[in-house]
Amino acid sequence: MSSALERPPAPPEQRQLHLPTPAKRFGYLVAAAANSVLLWAVHRLLDWGWPAFLTEDFEQVLGIVTASLIAGIVANLALAVHHRGRSRALADVVTAAFGLAVGLRMWEVFPFDFTGYATDWSGPVRLALGVGIGATGIAIIANLVTLVTGPQDDA
Image (cartoon, rainbow, N blue to C red; front, side, top):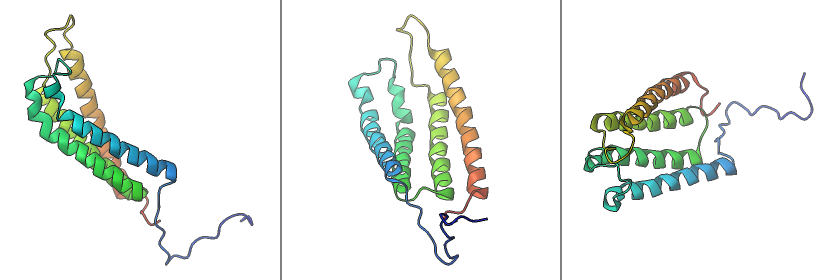
């Protein structure tokens, strides 16, 4: 039974563009701006000598970190325009894949040196990297399922 207050369904030939709400659009734009600031900062960390535990080996991961931040910027700008269904899942798969690549490269290079500290943080940092890599892998799988089986963008 339908109510008089319900909106009638749109004709099937009409495609609707799913624009994000102003609050979501603002959030995506803030995220893109934050990634832009991080992109600027990450290229200056070694020059600043901060954080002290970061080694010169960080240059070996800088390329993939840069690519990941740029992917995040592009994804957030795209989601500020269109963010429903498979578009969102695709953006999540791409950014998570870059995040996974960053985690794996960080694990391989491990550009950290904690010898100047009272506690050797190498173990906990490796554990955090491992948990992050595993969780990101799960996120990629979940978003691939959504990408394949989720609602169409125009539905």
